[in-house]
Image (cartoon, rainbow, N blue to C red; front, side, top):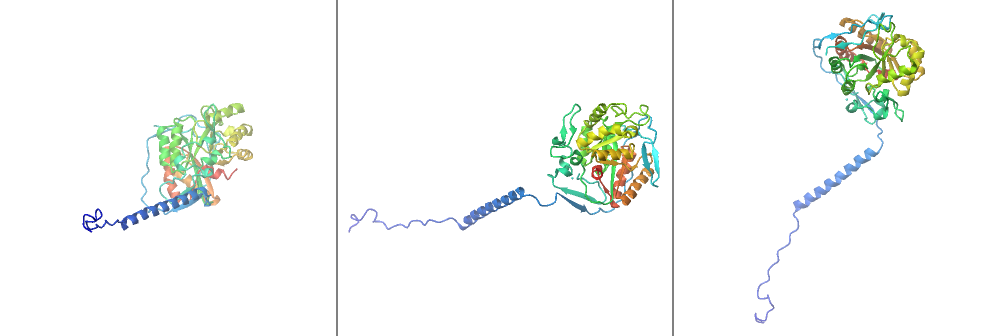
Length: 410
């Protein structure tokens, strides 16, 4: 067969077709790694979802004790600004009990509220530190520090004086919601309440910044910018109270201020004045008397007040000026957690005497398991308590909020 008769294209030698090549081995490895990573991510996400949906069997609170810092040379006493006090006459008639370092009980008059010139979860610097690690969902042991300055909407009710604290529909109490968390142990515990905050800008700032967060702060309802100072104090970890002016002996020459709860007033008027004080701020665990030796000695006068506190889920703290056994009994009968100061730490304006009274608190706590002190937001008091607190913790004392002790005295 000639070339003319050959099939078309047979006159040239057959050409080899190029060999198709599959993907390189490195590309296959990369693709496999990506698929494996995606599978692992899906498995991990599924595991996390299962943990979130399942109930957490672990306890809601854990305690961590941090090691003591190396000892340092104490700084000299820090003071800020000058302190001036009201010149109003002081209450007479033995309304405050002050116990000195020797254990002697001295009856001293009420002192006017001071004026100035101007993560529960935190711990004060220095000394052994106990940090409470808690489940933020555990609403019954205080608020997480990040939101401690925000009121719990479910624990508020509207009134003519603003939002007032009240038990939630599921039974939680403001005393528990706003309490400072504590270790839960039954060691040597000391609670100290410093009152008179809100009456001055400088004085309030000094107390909030200088005092350890374990110290409970009480606000005067006649103060200024109370919501602002409440937020600052709560962000620092302080537990709060509201002071309520009550009729003292010698009234009206000795006058606690406007809207005082009085024996001559009707129960309705006294409750209205109480609600005015309660509506001045939020995020507190209870009330504290200001003066009030005469009013608090009357069961008829105190019964409606304590009944209202029981309804709201608030505690009553007696700073030592309203101390009668009757008051404690009536509070317990109405289901109001009650706590009374054992020692007024600043009945005198002498640093050595304040230190002696703080020492007496330590002795009482060592013997009984707990002790309670009260004082005013004077510069000397604030500085002395701030210096003492860190050393007290080094000696094994736990500083706690008043709610932790009042809850034991229902």
